[in-house]
Image (cartoon, rainbow, N blue to C red; front, side, top):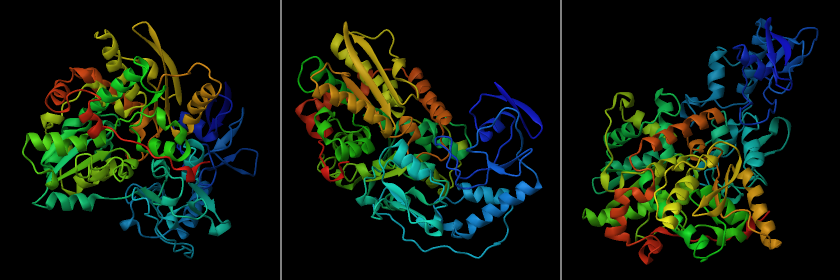
Length: 581
């Protein structure tokens, strides 16, 4: 351990840590706009400058390693004035349309300007009129609001390995845009929304569809059904002052009814259906040798988009089971409509998702119309539904807990852990074990697939047979897994894995691009913990033990992988070689 002084307070620290990191150990918060905990420092904004005793230089705390014996001053009148000037310079190149901005009241630049008491414009405005890009209908780019921090580019290029965004031009004309200065919809973008989750301002945010949903709710001729994704329940509370990870499932049901939805379902139920189909598919391939291995999960539309663009040769390995969102919507317009004598043509299914890519998923022709009607009609992110609840004047914190509508609202613990990385794999293993052995697991937890390690490799024994597993989250971690599979196939070596789960967003859906802002690994872990606690408290822990799942197959689908199940619940994938790297 080394020793140094921060504002005359001695601190011990591990060599290699930055001044910014060590300052936190003595409860000193150095302001910054460009630094995000997930990402390496770019030192772009300059707000974090500090003084070092014995030197005339001012150092940027976010990227400077603290050295043994250093004496650092982080705050004094001169530093405060320098930071205020830097903020004023940033504002001189930033539009003054906070009231109509997608990040109003949730913007890091707005917050820091308020903290420093910026009350007037000290420099002439030099803002540029750059066109908004809404071409993907999932996320929007407003480059005129970009402050050049580089977070979106770092996460797109080096965390997600997509390379859809870059900086164009130089100096004062530098701007964030898709590489090649094309529309975002024409770029390799996979709509994961991690750029928007990491942007500190309103330069990138979700494509808002709340008005569209309000129109449906106000239309007396439509029957509105809503579903909520697993990870929404442990993140929505952050918009109402709850700590991250607080499970608010039953308050969400109550709020959705107050908004005017006719029926409230839970996507956890359709996650159970996905597991019945996907686990059966794995057994067909692993035990009955019908199909190639490894089987790769496909619940994540951003991952599907990435695979079709860059790794279409892996299509034969992909599970054909639809995502829980699409399964729920299809069942709403077939099974539920039939059971309740509702005209599916008048039904609208709205889903509440942690993910911007889910907005893209409902436009895929391969996913739509299995019921004879469009599956999901509209997707709202967690951030959008928080706004709708506030617009409706609902006192969310005071709501009394309510239950879902029961035909497709009740779920097993396996359904709820879908929202965390490793959760789909764990849920599938619980049911695959049952399908192979016909026995009940004495311990349903598969803890080796849990946690935030980028790639988790392990194996489990099922009926004395080793099942080799990989779980990857964050697209940048996927190449490692795919390369091992490809190398084994090329060399005719034994398979490195039999079953693979991939989630595009770091942490899985708990860290989705449509979740409340400010996510870090600490928050991802806390949200995931909330899901695992929900799982532990469920009466049924496995999808095949959910009585409403049994009723669904008995009354409507016949059996997993039946002809009817294949027609309604399965899909196909399309190579798009024009994006090949």
